[in-house]
Image (cartoon, rainbow, N blue to C red; front, side):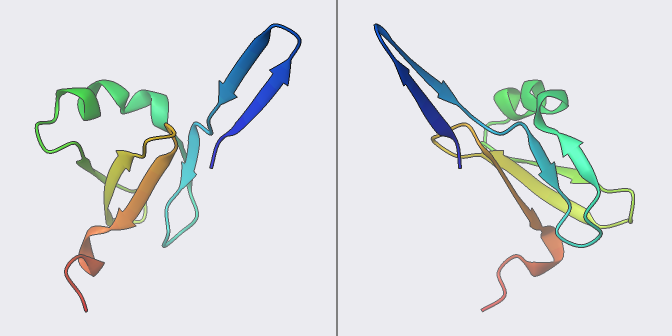
Length: 76
């Protein structure tokens, strides 16, 4: 989740731009994928991790990355 910095005469909202693979914990930077997410009509994209897992990736309302394993989609 992001955080906010309040000062005299200004308000600055910050968000995290790094995320980790839920499987192998490899760190990625969201900025490298923002253009693809912006062009996506679904609002999310899939990327391949170095550990050969396929990851779903989007950003929430705060601008923070949300990542999940594609193999765990639709499991209840």
